[in-house]
Image (cartoon, rainbow, N blue to C red; front, side, top):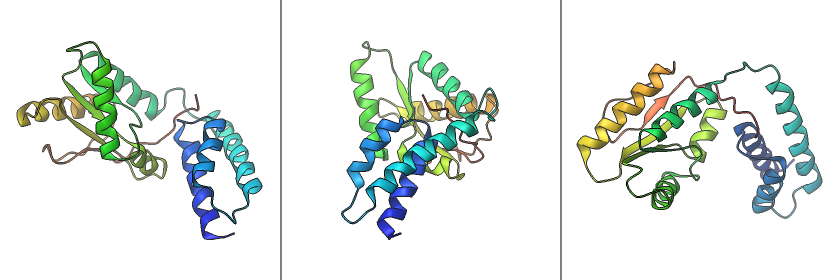
Length: 185
């Protein structure tokens, strides 16, 4: 197995276990990174194998997972006017762009702030290294951004998460012990 195939297999595993993508989504994503000289049939078969392995594991998961609790927190924050996005792009800048798009499409004045995590954060969580959550006020206001950080951290703590945050707007909120188990939709 060559280095490209190892990289692609790791990507497939991450996509499957993130829970955000269907098997057909992952097949499409595979073709975006497939290199000449890679064993396409083997890689396609690994998608089916990894999806089956995850579905089997899901049967043993608790009824309510950490992701379910996170989703519940994000829903409540959304109801409070905080644009709370899961898997918002792949990078911080992608996340900010997605927040901007969602806020733009929402009724005027619905959102006053945001929180999100992006694809690299999901990869970290899937690999047992915790989840980082960005936050802030929509207007450039440090005091309001601090209030949002406190609100998000408090909500996550009340939901039972171990929360680490230094209380500044320059540091994201960390859920270092999240057990990433998102059921495939």
